[in-house]
Image 1 (cartoon, one colour):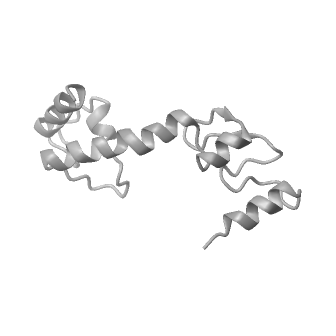
Image 2: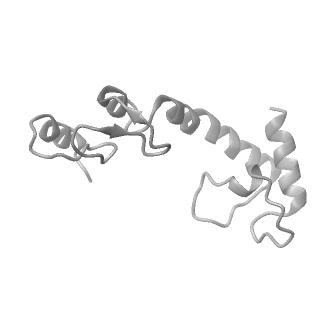
Image 3: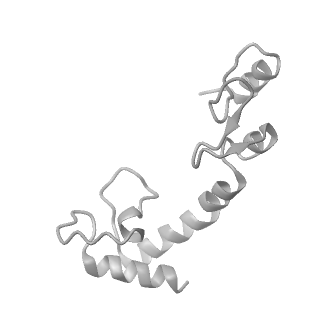
Length: 113
């Protein structure tokens, strides 16, 4: 298990150039999700992501997961937060993950929440 407190102290003391949260180097911090430049305070407060992405991770993803659960959608990919083909208007008739009916149900429920 990584000891972030020690890594933070080493980073502050200049013993390592890699940020313990966003993995950027040379005192430049970027969001691990959208690659937006962020301050060290925001980086460390939100564990390597910007405020917008932290909000998405903490609020939107649980909502998406609940909608998927309510509709009986089961993703076969390894990403527990997957809803990409449900949200980006996947039109693949042979989609191995979701049927067109489930995609439409998800999009309707997601838009009307």
